[in-house]
Length: 149
Image (tube, rainbow, N blue to C red; front, top):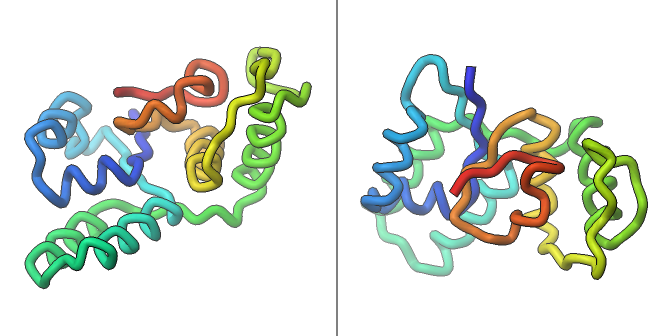
């Protein structure tokens, strides 16, 4: 069974029914019964904030509600996620913490936004693949998480 976590930009693509998002849905079989798809409470908050900032009307808000209703949201108040967050945060700051496959931390340290760190921790702890169009997770790929895009 495949497990995927969707980043905020993926949710936005689905709301807008962007051609690239439709292709990703098909390529990764996101609607199949053998595929589990989630998002993080962090991404849910981000996309709700974007809706406010962009001044989305009723129709776009309805599309957003439809997308969010179909995708379960994972909280972050779980011991495995909190532990992953702490270790990923320290590791990206160049601290020698226990990492998957005993990979040494990056030198120089890599700055990450807090929301991205939470998403990476949720993905890692969920043993899922991150679907994102961002490059913000590249230094974690193959170490802390699997990511596609």
